[in-house]
Amino acid sequence: MNLSSLSDARLAALMSSGELVLRLGPFLVRLKADVEDLAELIRRLYGECQLESPNGISDFHLQLSKSRKPRRFFRPQARFLLDGHSPFAPFPVDHAFPLFEWGLNWCVASHAHQFLMLHSAVVEKNGTALLLPAWPGSGKSTLCAALVYRGWRLLSDEFGLIRPGTCSMLPFPRAIPLKNESIELLRNFAPQAVIGPVFPKTRKGDVAHLKAPPESLQRSAELAEPGFVIFPRYTPGHRAQLRPLAKARAFMKLAGNAFNYELLGEDGFSTVATLIRACDTLLFRYDALDEAVQTLERLVE
Amino acid sequence: MAAPEALCWERGEDESVLFDRRSGQTHLLTAVAAECLHQLQKTDLDLDQLTEVLTVRFQAEPEQVTRELIHQMLMTLRELGLITAVRDESQQSL
Image 1 (cartoon, rainbow over the protein chains, first blue to last red):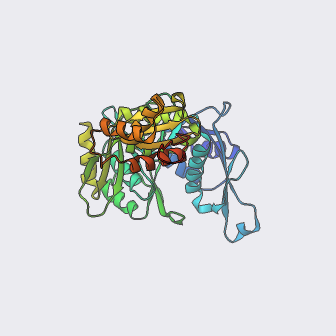
Image 2 (image 1 turned 120 degrees about the vertical axis):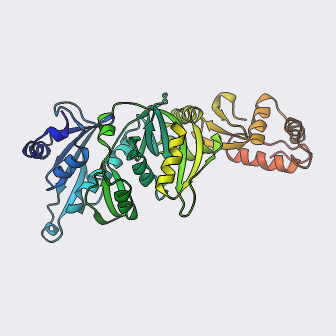
Image 3 (image 1 turned 180 degrees about the vertical axis):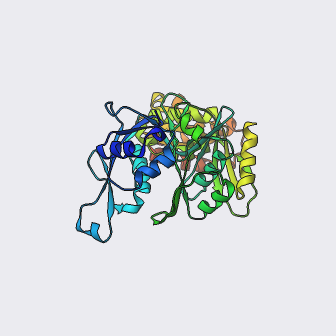
């Protein structure tokens, strides 16, 4: 059963009782919430996600609850809790969805050390996965969003997950957070894409979430074999251009922006080494999205 | 000198990546630095001998692989904990 098959009343009941368990890639996420409008948005952006039994074990027990402090009367807030503890400051209650998204990212980055977690978008086409590791501000999310609305499967916009000792990428498809100018850019680039409401003035500026293509959500148990590690850099005015990057340099860049490379020690080293050996390693500069997509498309034709 | 089993290598054409099991650190090494560590793992060499070996190995002109350059590189490798001492016969041991 998937999320979209629930009635509004049933979804609200499961969410308020803490019995809503979503399968998001390799994780089971239990969510309890008493925030209005959150259920509707989660259904809209994660409708194809599989529901799991509330009687089983979940990886993360999340709660989004309205703050009970006196300020709730003039500026209501929502708190994010993991296992009953609040790891960060509350958000305005009307920003509950970005709080859920960032909170879940934090949970995974802080706890899922059974995987090597690369800070990377991962997309797949024709059986070949392409890793796009990048620092914030490189245009990774925008490029990833453009690719998945030109037929690439989304594995993740944020986490390149690999089980140590293997070389296959695990999907963790989620809504893609678009920021500022990228929101309008993607509306024009992919008019068919579902984009949630704009959350203004977050710590990352204006943010709106682009729904992962339904097929990507439905195939979230299907691993992908990596063929390319490409470091993207949005460069205004620059023609789309791929350049080879020496493998040792690519290794250091990839390991350097992983969430837990050092923590995994030798397992991290050997997993990155296996990945780099299996892939072509490239630098990518681009400006226009259409040209960027066409350039990457040629790699897997 | 780090024992061979303490180090994991991932070799590239011009540069190599080295993981030090003792420190958990990962290093990017030039081909000369990587070869230098290999030579020192094989046998005990002083600075002059090492300079000569590397000059031959890389078919370099004497001014390209100088004694000073190798000395500087050894100092860096020592700072990284990859070697423990540098013996320079013309000066005091470091």
